[in-house]
Image (cartoon, rainbow, N blue to C red; front, side):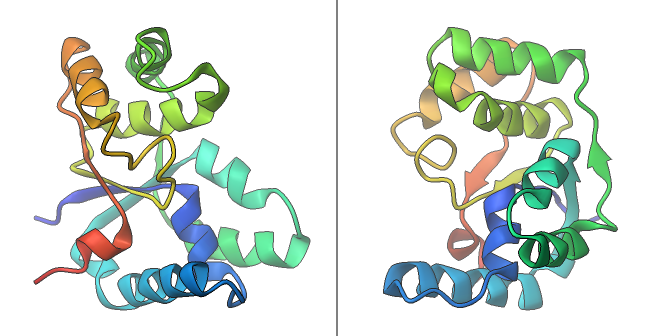
Length: 157
């Protein structure tokens, strides 16, 4: 059985984007495209209506490319448990109130038992300084937290 993985919007954006001139962003794009091509089939991929909404924003051509990548992925429902986890992440200040959508991405992954949450959002999601607080909130809500990581961390051995 494949591990369940929630694909956050930044991953889809890096796969679909034109190559960046910024060397770090370009490297992240390459890693992400490599992961998408070589590793994604080893996981059961999911996203959410939140990812769809975020992917649909902005430039029409870029949005079309992003939406094309996720059009067949099952959508995780924003249910009562996900809403409660998101509220707790914000209330406990594990995630700042200014990053409500980021809290919801984490909450969706936890509420639906995702083993992984894949993201390039290292400010509010894949951030080592908040990992313990995020895990504590998820467990207090009766859920095991997902492993939150970047595509680079999930390239395999």
